[in-house]
Length: 138
Image 1 (tube, rainbow, N blue to C red):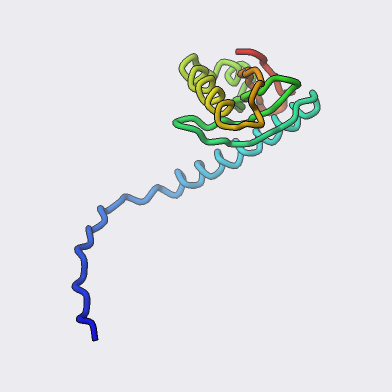
Image 2: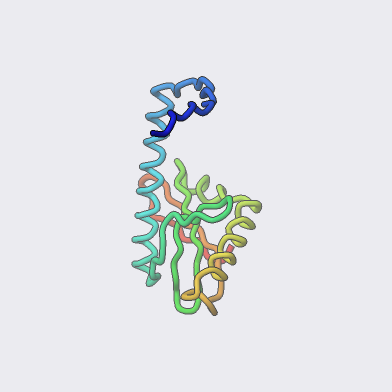
């Protein structure tokens, strides 16, 4: 018969402060609204002839909202939903564009099915009560 094992030292978890209920509710609402905006943007792109290849693709430090294809072009689409269309159109900054370009290039290298496609970065801007605006080639 084997002797009983001695218990391993267990590190005590640091106490964490629970999130306020309003914070959890608003975070969940924002997540659902963002997800809905991405589906609406995908439907808009499909109406324009794009083939949707993926949603919420995670790469190093960046999440690609939509990966689409149009002809021989792979399109990384950033979806922005704001209170006004102007705010949504101005929400993408240069640093974010560069991260999206890097992430898109990494996807093209990693996936053999995308080999030989050109890369393009687009945005779809959404606002309540407005028709989506698709900006190509940022």
